[in-house]
Amino acid sequence: MHQHHPFSLRERPKPASASTAASTVPDNAPIPTPKRATPGPGIGLGLRRVCPMRKHGTPGLRGGRSVILAAGLAACALGAIGAWAQGVSSDLADRLTPAQLSTYEAYRTARDKFDRELRHYWRRVEAKRDARKAKRMLGQEYEAEDYIARQPPKATWPELPPDIAKIVADVAPPPPVPPMATVADFLECARQHYGFAPTLATEREFKRAYAREALAVGLTKDQVVRIYALETGGQGTYDMQSGVNPFTKQGRPISSALGYAQLLHANSTSELVKHGERFARRLLAMAAAPGTPSDRAAALRAKAAIVRRMHRAARSIPNEWSHHMRFAGTPTGLGIHALNLDADVGPWLQVLKLKGLKDDAAAAGRASLAGAEIELMNLAGPRTGLEMMLPLAQNMPTSNFFSEGGYYRNTIVRDKTAAELLKALDERMEANVRKPGAQEFAQIFDEVARR
Image 1 (cartoon, rainbow, N blue to C red):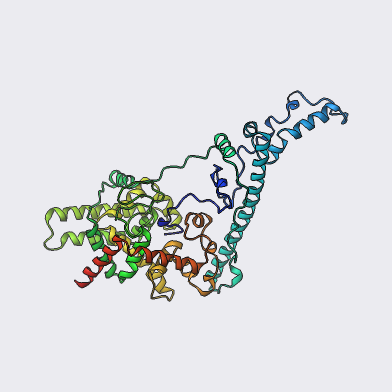
Image 2 (cartoon, rainbow, N blue to C red):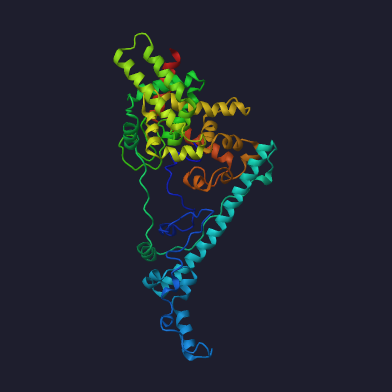
């Protein structure tokens, strides 16, 4: 998974602020991106009504000493010129009293200053990251100056009173947030585009298949159970989606992350590109195995044909993460994500994703990984996770290793060094392995290992 994390609930990013009330202001972009400033509501409309005399011309303008001109300019100065200078729209200025307008201008001034500082910070982070990438491609060692050594700036704008915040919200309501695709959407897209319905299982059956696959590829009980404990809170179900309670089904999805390993929809696409034909051949081998009931064999053969169709769809786009992300959000991509729910394919698909991280680490000279180290690679991306384990990088802020959006989405990432993040992941795992789901998973691993 690349710069995301399901257990963090992926709340809408916002900067840390000394004022809690300020965070209630419904600006269109709570965290400015490096490419665009965060304007005030209605910016650019400020002079629409500030000087009534503009409507009829300005008497005495040629003379330059007209009393009318002086009075007009004074009126403008006492009116909305100040509001325009701060980017306040005429609609908003009309709704605010002079005292409220003054308070709002102070808020915007402080926030605009912070926005500029934040944009500058993240531009420097991106430049350093690009420089490290170039060094890596040239086989050069990293140095301390290749990183930003301080944490992102924190917001310190003044508190905006609730009455002003409400007026701002009325004048410039936040844009609607598009609904996130749900498990029901994954299943419907799979049905419509591939004629696919996953083979369902009980939790114990799915865990048993998962443990069997994990041990077969060299993953340990400790690694898998600790990742499960962190990703699902230690009690997740195999159809758990990030943001939704796995038992009550209450809540709203905040990510496409699904299952024990909380794979994103793009992860499913990427794994299918790598292993899709192997999945299909294995299903056919299962169908041909002695003793397989005829109806089960027919279902497995049909599933193999579906997997091959999905494989062709996934391979129809460039084999790059950015393309997988875009494709995964389409109906055909969402349908592929439903493979995680299938008792035959889902455990293998998720286990192979974890095995890929282990293999990447082994290729980089780290043959032995703790669960938290695999999760760090899972969270930041394989190459970045390995970089964060380097002695030089361990004391660097985590902002060096995540995009701005990824940094603010993941609460566990913020305001830490790489070493502190790894420790926090391990502590979260340690707390959650005591939960019922993790305890059951560990027991099932032991049962499978004894057979």
